[in-house]
Amino acid sequence: MMTMTQTELSQIMNIAQQIKAISAQATFNVGDSVWVVQKTKRTQGVIEKMNPKKAVVSMRGSRYTVPFSMLEAA
Image (cartoon, rainbow, N blue to C red; front, side):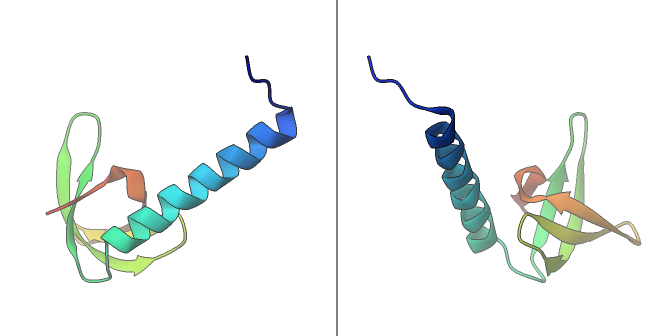
């Protein structure tokens, strides 16, 4: 059985998070229409700005900072 140190596991987690962020950024662009998915509802919005881990989405006249994991293409 293979064993890893805590440092090695942390490095793997960091790499996985970076890959996830890069993948999400490649999927969406500023101006895209998206769905913000919550537990019980979906709200349509438009991406106004993209940050490394989250996007600023305009919905219902307000702006919200939303993690990429909560966004779906509309």
